[in-house]
Length: 400
Ligand SMILES: Cc1ncc(COP(=O)(O)O)c(C=O)c1O
Image (tube, rainbow, N blue to C red):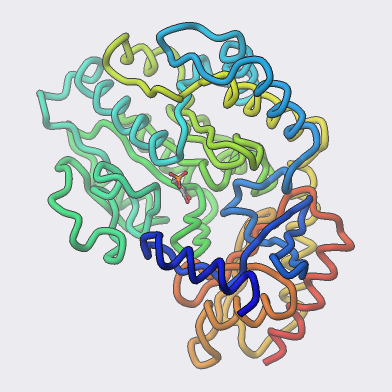
């Protein structure tokens, strides 16, 4: 048994079996590359489900982490800290919202958005007590808490975890009319991912978000966009909804906001919505802590200074063209935006998992999202040479 195999054995002995990782133990990483315990290197096109938009161990972000660790790490919100204000300012001004509310994980951000929408529904829209409804899309993924799962339609994520919270309705993704039909006087909000990431990189028809924005405005319903996976340049815009030129009422952000080193999430909204939160009705011990705030602010600085959004804009279409030019007999569909690319494998050729293992053997890491779809989402600062290296290996795997 080599060192990696021993570590896997120990991990499996002592940890819950709630994931099915690739059989690889990573011990070191830099930029777009990770190294296993045996010293083999792999091109990381999983990038921690888009939490590594800045690549592994970005020097400026690591410096911020270390400097802040030497100064102050945690105050809780019982006190102010000298980092949170500047982080909130940076996030709000960049994103064009009045206010932000910091949390830690993506799931918590989504819970926060759902709570904001319900409270807005009661206080502002005057929905009768406990009658608020929120409309989500089928095949969504926004986390794994009981609240978030209450709008989930995925059997593997929900089975055995009921009963769920009432007040959620789901409609087919990509269908604006279905949303309008589901709206009634008790509807507080519609929540959507602009591209369903975990759902298999599902891109809705062009104009969908615009249509939903018009419908929600017309019926006095909030529009929540979950940018946890698609945000911070991943699709070639700061936020994916900007491809359709809309302004949502609430945006949830996470993953890459932590610069690949720390969990940092938030919701963004204007004053009319954010004022529903008052002392005592929502919070988090760690949300907005000085370490998170420093890392969050610097991660946003790096995103802008290094033109990472533009990188995704340039490299995404290049990558998709190269994939299409392979004319692969095993590929059923190629879809995505920017550097968020889904490759659907024909069922007769094998599963997404089979292909992720074949790619791993050649040094490229990509993970299946739904049974047949592989998601490629490398760090946004991947070099063209490294991307080409990965594409050459994909050619070997996808030639059939
Ligand atoms: C769109 C979306 N929302 C929310 C989440 C949940 O984030 P977290 O795993 O940080 O709780 C995810 C995670 O994959 C996601 O893709």
